[in-house]
Image 1 (cartoon, rainbow, N blue to C red):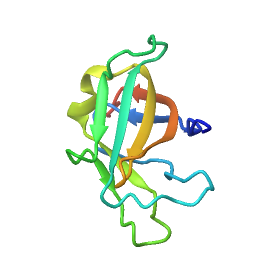
Image 2: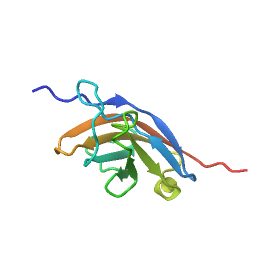
Image 3: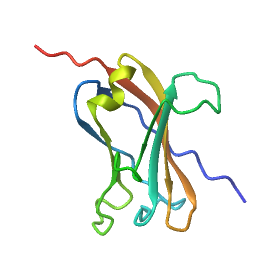
Length: 128
């Protein structure tokens, strides 16, 4: 069997002192159809950019604890999508850092899908 592709590149930034929702790329099957995430789990993990393989995640978000919200999978335009919910306390200590991140989904049949990989940049919150 051929290995599943590693997903698509997805880079984004969050601001350290603000609540922020980030729409993650759509989880898709090999044929490009959006996956039904109902009954599954979505996870995001990140470690400092350039960390050696196998490094423990510095930041982990998951739909199991509510820090990732799986959207309405009955709506065609939302199927396969989830939002990562960043709170200021989640990224406060990561300010000014660049992290390598990966989004995975584990569907209801327990199959793992590598949705995306890329960088997360944590920007300092600047207020007037």
